[in-house]
Each structure stands twice: as structure tokens, then as C-alpha cells.
Length: 375
Figure (cartoon, rainbow, N blue to C red):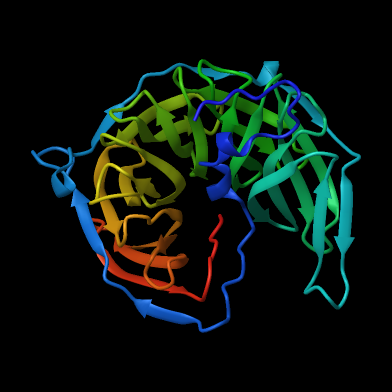
């Protein structure tokens, strides 16, 4: 997980970002094959993990635990190089061949966006660029007109090394960003959380936190007073790699609480949402289930991170999840599973009860060949 980039490298290596880039590509969903499509309700194993009283874990493995983490967070706003930029290549296509418009932007090297948010007359995209060489890679934020796809502004910010934006959430007049930094903090990679104005992209604050190893923020959501971030942390929890959930103040980014959750092996969070007084986090676990990676869902109190329940879904041992939504008391998961039909990944959609995380239903569908779900 920890790989140093050479000073001559203009783009991040696949190995370093394979965990977070491959699963976090925003606004890219490859079409499902139309040859012999099929859909079915499938048998899935659902397990609830009890945090406190179990002496044995799921299928004999040790139970998972929630752990309060005390780390320092750093406000690095004054140390960040920030600029509004121009000169990106822009290719706007709008004719009868396209439904409305299609916009591509970029520089000479890699420019990748992973998440998107919408408000009013504009959409906002977040990712990274290595064009402007503030560092080897810098967080990129762009505002684009909904009506015609024209670029309204682009800003980049970062330090001397590498900085990435992976998740975005828009609330009122501000865009909140979760990502990863190599420019600031303690470890080889640390969690980055930033707040920018939707009017001009001006940086309100940027906070970094983490341990001495590999830490990365992926999913983000916001309520009236707090910013909630999830991702993965190495070396601060109970396992090799654990899910973390952090709460920060919307006002100044100060860290309110930080929890890690995990078993003996690996867990991490990719998406987070809030409903009422509870947070819901999803991704995958290798600590629970008979083998491989299984879907891992968590409910926590938004006030202090108290763990309410955790559950796993296992179909064939290679079942990651990518996104989560809550509606009318039910939880909906988007992911994939391998091996049910032709041996290639198929799209998986599941519903859980928000009361205890029990499985309501699971549907898998796809055609021939590989299907990619990216979010």
C-alpha cells in the first residue's frame, strides 16, 4: 500500500491507487452487455456481527470491534498552495449525436475526477491534476454550467508532494471534499478533508489527520453542523487495515471524534450517508465470512460514533460494495459479485433493514463478459 513516487513521475502509479482509484472513479459506468441478459434473485448469506458479547466471530473468526482513536489533526490552510487556473484543454460537444452536451477538460498529463455534486445551475467535479506542478499531483475542483457544459471556474490546491480528491458533498454554499495527501501529516499518506466556496472555489479550510502509515479518505457526507468522512486506516485500529469514520466541524474542520472498526484482517469504507441520527457506511471485509472479500455495512450514531450494528453479505467471497443509499427506513447497496453465471463480475443490488442490518433481498444481473460498476 505504501509506494513512493519518483520525482520524475507525472502520474500516480496503478499499484499505489489500485484500492482507491479503481473503486472510486466517478461518473463512469460501463454499459452492461445486451447479449443474453439475465436477472435473478440470488441466495445470499447475511450475518450480523455483535460487537460486545460474542466469544466467537462469524464462521469462527474473531469478532470486530469499534475503537476510539486519538490523533492530532492539522489545519494546513495557510501552507497550501492554491490557485485559480486557466489553460485547461476543453472540448465541448453538443449536437444531435449527444443527448445534451459532453465536456472534457484536461492538461498535458493526467487529470482525473472521481466524484460529482450538483446544485442550482452548476455541477461540481472533484479529482486531481498534475498539470500545474504545485506538487506531483494536486486536488482539482471545477464548476461547470448545467445548461451548456461550459467551464465556469477551475481551482487546484496542494503541497509539494501528492494530493487527491476522491469524494465530494455539496451543502448550501460549500463543497466538502475527502481525499488523501502525501504533502502534509504524519504518515506516508494521510486523510485530507477540505471545504471550498461554490461561488469561486476559494478555500475555506483544509484539515489532514492520520497515523504513521497509509490512511485515505473516500466517502463524505454533511449535515447542519458536522462533516462525516470514511475510508481506510492502517495501523491505528485492531486489524491490518480498518474502516475509519470521522466527524469534523463544518465551521473550522476541527476533529470531533474518530472511530476505527475492523477485525483481524482488512476492512475499509468507500461510501457514507446519513439518515436521521445515524450514519451508514459500506465497502468490504476480509475478516468476516468464509473466504475472500464480503460486503460490510455499518450503522453508527452520528452524535458520537457509537456502533449500533454491523453486517456482512456473502455470496461467493468476492463481493465488494461501491455505494449506499437510505430511503424510507431501508438501506440499498450497489456492488458486484463474481462467479454466479459466467465467471465475470455481475452487478449486485441489495436491500438491508436499517433496524438491524438484516438482509431483505439481493438481486444480481448482467450479460456476458465483465461488467464494471464504478462510483
